[in-house]
Length: 67
Image 1 (cartoon, rainbow, N blue to C red):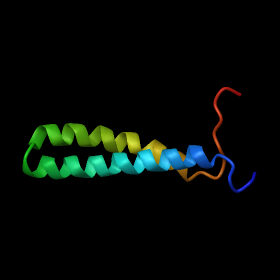
Image 2 (cartoon, rainbow, N blue to C red):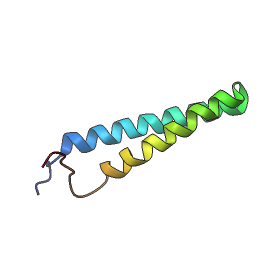
Image 3 (cartoon, rainbow, N blue to C red):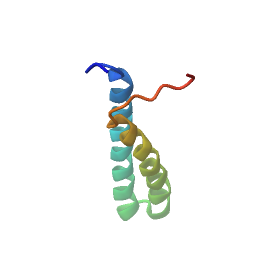
């Protein structure tokens, strides 16, 4: 595999994963200060959704669906 194989797929997964981690951190902060229940309810799914995206972004092999 070349160095640029699946570059777009990995970059997109990494960017979306990082954005979801940031959203999770923001809502944890809000959960601790302003919105106790709602902040944690939104933060937990954001962290859960970011894990597979970040995991697939840093794999060596590419994942192609439909083959």
